[in-house]
Image (cartoon, rainbow, N blue to C red; front, side, top):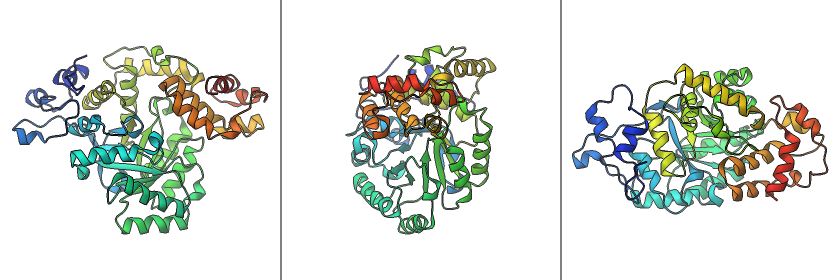
Length: 410
């Protein structure tokens, strides 16, 4: 793995990882890849200023009826340094100029980290910023918007989401008035919401009927391909012009250490690259958010995005085998099934999401912070959750994983 002194993306990284940059990228452009890349704390410099050929750029798609284009690879704000992050500069150079933040990420400091980057890079107008509000009531939402603008030290946000929406009734007339007023004032340019609970299809159908919802970011991975209900809802939203952003594309599991090692590499892509390419093959999806907290992940994902060749049938078969092998460890957050069977307000989906942060990402602090917000999920050791396990359509051992969450995240 070749990196320069500051861990930036080198020419060898780009040319070697993807084994080719796709159709239409000639030798001169490929040779320029990495030549102008700055490492360490270097900031983006336009290659034309140095008389160099343009760097290869990650493909872009139109984000629904916003009419704007975004890269298919989006930089997740949970994996960024909260002070100043040089990975943003590296990403922007290859066209990954969309950063997904939130008022609550990094303990509330992800927006301030972006502000630190913009202060130094002086390229706010080149970067699309999506950020989010945990407050879903109109007054709280508006307050959060202005707090975000202050944190970002910016006059506007490109896209503002309701964060982790689970109640479609929150998209009411009062919120519409607030959203349209903020748009008219130029404070937010576009509006949407994120969701990852058990009612994602319902929320997508609601977005399709709600003209002022322009984008939805939702849980979508290689395991979603055969879900007829979800796919029908995606169709409805896409046909209505809602821009669709995929998140949690890795389909991470809880309770299975190093689960990714069960992926059988049959071609040039590792598991993390292959699952992204599987999502990008769905042309209804404008982009996929990835938490790229290291330069290694950034360069691997950029290489996968630059390479236009589709997955081979052998690679798709390998993904299907991996999905089957790990299906009993992947919770889809459908609390309406397991919690109802348990007969207790167990917040099973959120609890297993916290366990996944611990097991799959190694983010014990984040996992414990999430669990601390779920008082109903604590003290469940005496509750019989065997009925919840039986209710899971995917065979997840709900009872065993809930017990383990209480043990490792106490």
